[in-house]
Structures are given as structure tokens and as C-alpha cells.
Figure (cartoon, rainbow, N blue to C red):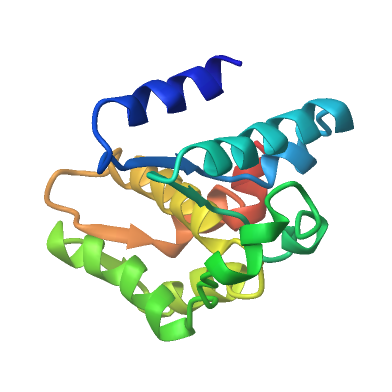
Length: 170
């Protein structure tokens, strides 16, 4: 009810008013095992908001491996037409997101093969960026303990933290 009132209020000011609502990680409705009734109520409220407010633009993000479980939900009338799949990152793109920020911070990987190892550890995952980000953050924390003139992100630190998988489980 509060959601629908807010949407109605947002569109009441002017006929041309547009409202953008972003729901990031919609798959959390499934991965956190929300009660089906709560999940369906939430999705139905989003759909009703779209119906009632022509100026509403709803953007949801969802991992592709979970998408089939939501294609028949209350948002189904808009699902296919509004779908914009983002392809998995290539190895070259993963390399860029690893190396560019390091380079901009005047850091380097020692040995250079560490970058390939990072890529290998996440490349086949359905959602590599969060894990890669976490692993790089942990690696940076270890780097920060070195001498100020040492600009290397080291494989020995990566191994000490247990790579991507062990760093996350810790």
C-alpha cells in the first residue's frame, strides 16, 4: 500500500513526470528463501505500480542463472520486451578491471601471471565481479602492510589468503 501510494504521489505532480525505480539483485528474493507469499506480494506490487503509473520506469537486475525462476512472475507481461541481457565478461574485460585500477594507483602484480590466476579463479562463475572485487580488496589489504615504497600486489599474499574461495569463506 505504501509503495502504491508513493508511486501515485510521484506521478501526481505533472502528467510528464517520470519515476525511475531500480531493484538491484532481484534474485535475492529466491536466494534468501523468502516466503513465496511475500515474494509474490512484492512482485505483484511492482507490477501494479507499472500498471497505475505510466511514468514509472522499473529496472531490475538479476543474475542470468536465476532469471528462469522469475519469468512467470507478476512482471511477466513486461519481461520479454524489457529484457536487456548483459553478456558475461570476457577474459580481456576481466583483465582490464583487474589491471586498470592497479595501474592507476601505480601498483603492479608480482608475478604478472597473478592476473591470469585471478581470472582463472573467477572466469567460470556466474557472477565473477563480486568475488573478484572481494579478492582484490583482500589482496590490497595485505599489500598495505608492506613498506611504502613496495608497489607490488604479490602472489604470496594471494596464496596466504587462500585465493578467491578461501578468502571469502574466512
